[in-house]
Structures are given as C-alpha cells and as structure tokens.
View 1 (cartoon, rainbow, N blue to C red):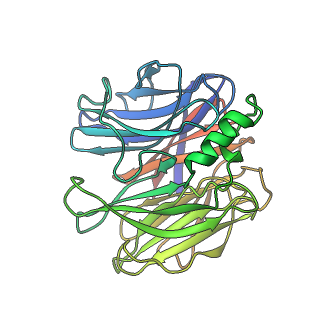
View 2: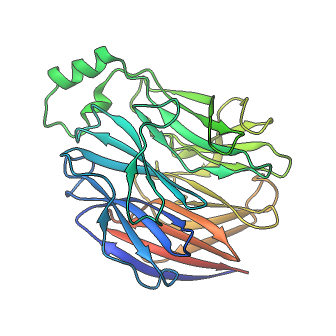
Length: 339
C-alpha cells in the first residue's frame, strides 16, 4: 500500500517537533527545536535544515532567531509563494514570560526577519498546522492559554525557580482551541473558538490539527492529556461555528496527531495509536476515504522501536514528505510513496 524510505536529518542532544515545507526554489526545508538536553530549557533554539535532493541529504543546522538568551520553540511553518513563516514561542526557558512571534523568510529559508506577533495572539499561544481550503480561504488552528498577569507574577516570583515547567503551575482554567480564518489571502484573520478543555485536573496540550471534508465542513482532532484517546470537534460551516468536543475511538498516548489531505478526497492521519500513556509507538499512517468516518487503511511506517513524537508533513504528487522526532534526539525524514 505504501513504499516508505527513511533518512536521518540530524541527531542532537535534543530534537523536538520538526516541521517541513517545500520552498519556492524546490528545496525541502525542515525547521526543528534543538539546543540543550531537555525541553523546556533556556538553551533551546530553533534551527533550519535544507535539502536540495528531495531528502537524500540535508545541510547543517542554521539558527533562524537572533541569540538573546531566551528559549525558542517553533510550532508551525507555512509557505505561500516565496513567503515562509515560522511561528515561534519565545520564553524564559520555563514556559513563563511566553511571547509569540512570526519570523519570515523570502529567500527559501536562508535569512529571517521578525515580523512581530501573530494575529490575535501575542502570548501564551501555539499556532498549529495551517490548511488552504478548496475556496482559497486560509485556516490556521491554535491552542491558547488565558494566563493572567497575577498568575504569571505568582509563579515567576513565588514558585521554586529550578522547576522545569514553571509556567504550567499557573492556575489557568482552560486550554482554548480554535482557528484563525482568513478570506483575503492572509492579510487579515478572524478568530473562531472550537472548544475549551477544562484544566482543573492539570495542564492540557491540545495540539489541534484540521482537515476539510468533501462537503466543505471542517474536522479538528486534538490530543487530551491523561485520557488515552483523541478528541474531535466539527464545524459545518468551514471553521466558523463548532459543535461539541467529543472523545473518538482513536487511541492516543498523549501525543500530537497530524492530519494531511491527500488526493481524491482522502485524508491521512499520522499518529501513534497506543492507549498506554507515554508509549509513543508504533508510528502509523491511517487513511480515510469517507471523510474520517472510518479508516480503511492502517499502515505501520516503522518497526524500529522507540518514541516517535510530533510528526509533520505534506502531500505532493503521490508522496507524503514527513518529518518526526525519534527518542527526542534524532530528526527523521520519511518519503512515503502511496499506491
């Protein structure tokens, strides 16, 4: 059903959440967080890797954000024409003092310039994988945390400073997921909330991914910590209004899912379908040809054991170009040739 070729992009003491796009000059560009030995940490940085031969070889890493002593994380990479945008989270190294920025490149990812904050979200937000709808509208998922100044100051000045995830110690009531919607090619965006996950029992990383269905409606899949399942919301009007969030029957060990549109209306889901929390193996591709009602093909992409996390990819001419982190150290590139 699929021919899979796997190559290594790089190995570091830390490699987190690689992202991949095709540049205007035909090169593949992978952006990934490296630096330090764990995440989050003040040493975390974001680097770019280039491939001019469709993933067979990759360049050495080059930083895309000026060195200022802050931790840097990238959650989405888009390309429209010759404009590439990397959506960054910049923080103190403990997910506190969390700001959001857009770094843009107009020379295929070789030089970058700061273009300020994303629409609607200057702080405490992860921007997630964008889709271009069939009518040309742009839909960009997000996850947002309404951290107040009072809570920020409380954990920053009163909590034990060496604590790893100090930002998640804030008493923040919910994680909001939704989409930024543009009908004018990205000049302006409206914000539409899909759901709010209660965080009274602990912090939640929803990491939404969306797909447009054959009738123009949109579905969103989300990670929900401590549950063992993926959750879903649906929008009948293409992303503006949303139904209730509900648990699916798709196992998930608290790992980011990734939906990728294929040809002929098919949709691929890349994930690690395990009900055991923390067990991010096996890594599989599920394909639906009926608008995500069922998954007619389930393909295991690798039998090599380990932890596979935070996949990202796109479809092009019968191939899915995909990247993923393996064991938090290695960035892998998958060329998946579909029948």
